[in-house]
Image (cartoon, rainbow, N blue to C red):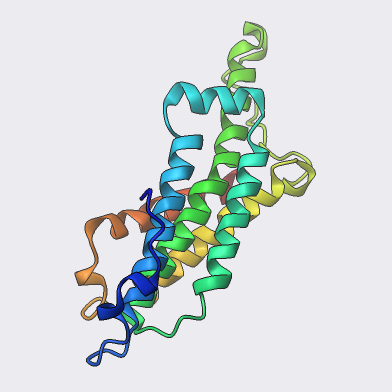
Length: 198
């Protein structure tokens, strides 16, 4: 990954006569997504201690903004690439998963911060009979993380839509197992975010 390969470095993969797909561009687009995934993981999720440190310090918005910008730039560069539906499905699913992976960090931060507050509150305020407090008592957009939560919801729904529209015979069954796993967190994070906001 230290070498900056582009589609021009793979002339034999360009414009396959059988499918019409420019596999060299697909390879470059996929490598760029892989690099983004690597950077996101190393900065936000490298270890439990590092993630907790970012969450408790509240010093993560600049990383989320930078990653969002990088993902939008990737989408601007590659979203209109003319591809067969199977390849388009794989790239789109990975893109939406990365959008979810980045932005769900803010939701995770809110949950962790509220959990810490509850643990540190006096015993008499920790009654099991106390009504459950909403994570967003004034609405999602009243919190600094609101835009990230909404973007995570959008990405989760988009990933689920892609999985639901993909043909199981000609597309889904050929995907590597990790792509199925991209759909599961999308579903759970969407449901968790939806229920926490209501």
